[in-house]
Length: 135
Image 1: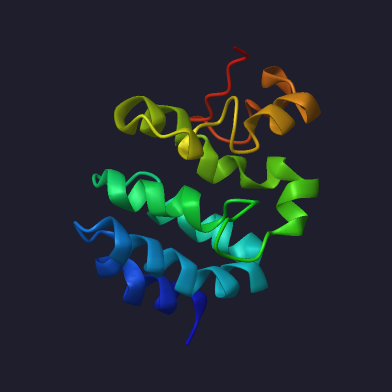
Image 2: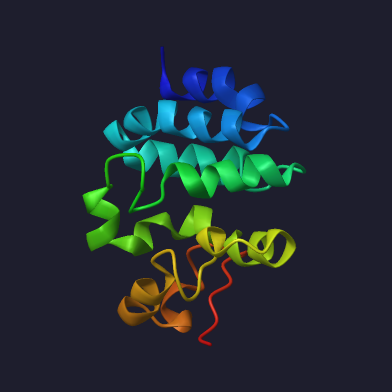
């Protein structure tokens, strides 16, 4: 099964109304995303981060979170958090609506590290929707 097919198969669970179902959905697919991180980021940025459902958008950011409590860390994103910017550019909008720090590209969730490594002007070209503001 390709990564795109796997994401399509998990999508209904990623949009489930129960948080536990959504949590297990991203935990289940995370190892496959980690195995091909560049393709995963491209697929999530292209097809998930602009979805009308905030649960789908949140899934995109949660599934590639560098440090997971209940799952393996993505070491490459701890070292190079800027690689996740195409997905996390939507995080600020999501955090404002959901009030969840884990979806923010700002303090917490690796956002501080991203800001230390990059300045806003350095990343503006990566995504027209990137929204990183120092606080």
